[in-house]
Length: 311
Image (cartoon, rainbow, N blue to C red; front, top):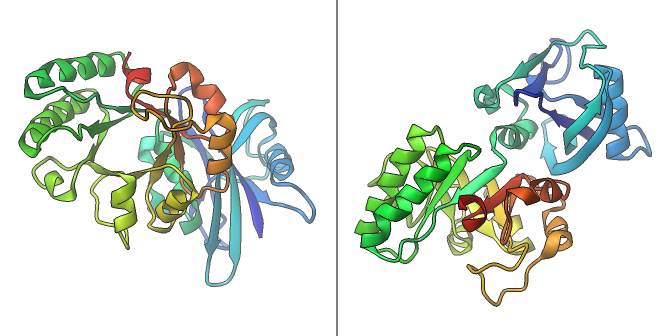
């Protein structure tokens, strides 16, 4: 059974959520709007039809972001999930269903069907994922922390990856603690890109896996925050989805100083890599905030960058 699902946000950033009926499949759980594809009907056409019938709106722009296959005890579903950027009309419950606009931070995956939990992640994740610059040494830590602090103070960043592969353990921990303090002040969630045992010396945070660390894992590790991974090809994406991680970063999309000599994917190549992903995918490499709409039209969750977001 193929189901088209819409992820809609209002002007305040809230997400539209409904509730399943008490006498149907998976009763009383929350759900995102959408419905089954009719025989011979494409997923996008089904989305447009279902949202018109359920909500009374006409979809003007919607881009597929997730493809989720899930087996329940009594049925198998394939969710084709679209971020709906624009629509015409006022949202209303045309079929008597319960609807609510919910702050993404209040969404709890446990209240949704298991197949929808990656959609909850997509709803909660921000557009921009800032990666920390690497200090040239211990003496440069304070100045790099100040750079990140100034950027976070301007707003618009929802996630911070703490990355500095050139620093030794003690210096990295010093850098990480200072960045985490800054992120906490600005309400920004952090992920640490470092060996797992280094995280034990830090406040609770997410873990960002290098592709090598991702490939070394046979099952999802415990993590008190987001679990993410960097990937560069289909093999990496498939491993990330199987683990599973909460989201991935893929690239480089454009030429970048951090990947010299690596052939960039380009938007078309990124779209091909992302196609069929069951977890949100950030685009990385040579991108700035001005590229957001272009990469989201390929199905990206948003943009991950160092200089492109820091400056």
